[in-house]
Length: 85
Image 1: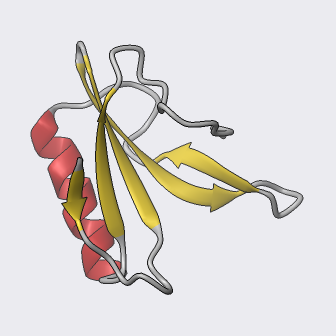
Image 2 (image 1 turned 60 degrees about the vertical axis):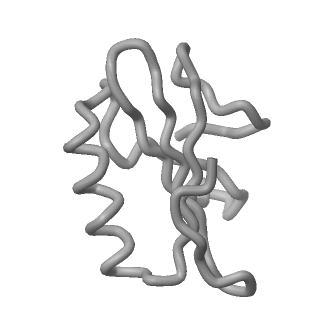
């Protein structure tokens, strides 16, 4: 589900993964070689919804062009091909 519409030309993405025991937010990143990847913005372990919401709010304040997408992901893996750092 699209939670927030960002800029269609320059907006990055946050992916909110809803799992069995909490929420994980993935943020776009680059690996050491400059290839696209994702990082767990809210940390290794799932967090409560309020913590995830606060993280998203802080990121949107820093970058108002962000898109925010939400996925049901019981195993905390995104439903798309992704390298997670």
